[in-house]
Length: 300
Image (cartoon, rainbow, N blue to C red; front, side, top):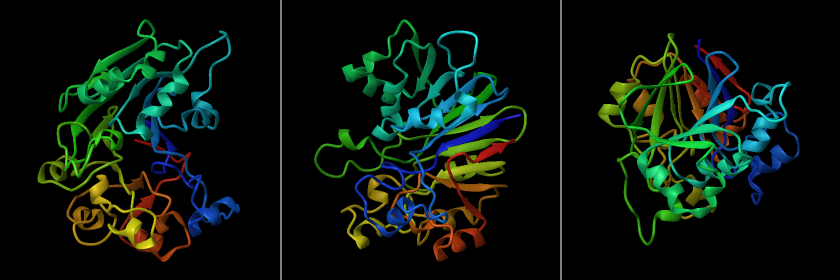
């Protein structure tokens, strides 16, 4: 059986975002039950509840570990952790910064595409993860491998290079593993985790078809959301994220993909679907979609 815990369901900055006075963030800070807070996107996966694979090390990882009993150290030895591997789906700050919380000489395996590991290699701050205790292992795309009893297949999805690596101008869509999805299974149904995806392709459509569960990029409700409310100058697609709704959207793409359970993750603080009492959330529910919350658990 595959056990999956959503450690964080928010996009970069989380919800409420530290500098946002948007209506959703104000409601969340006020303790509104329809606007629960969300830390930055990550999941933990296990087959036995003892050894855990964390997918993406968000900046909130220390908090996420503290709030997830399954990831607490076990009694008996002074220092230990059930986190035995970390898999990165890209090198954005909200996927790698949490690695620095894991620098206390605790052994684990760090997995990622060669392009992602190259970003870590180029930044000396990540040498805090001493190579004599943290093994870095490059993941080959489309080649299944086993990690902690979990069958894992990493695959490229249309995305973008990390924001800090963009340089001047629009770098365009990257499809060489800069953004990845992962298929996870342990003898039952397959779960796909795709926290960032710029567009649906025929190859991705075929890969996801028949999945027991897909956790998919839900950053923005509409492509122009950030521009329209004055929160930023870029569309969702320019940032490497399909919108939930509208032409070329996730709802439109998945209308023809057979998936048993569909869950949005990596949801930006500006997205009104974060609010459980919003018409946008009702629209998603009518289309068969759930919106992830921190602590949500799935078993396959």
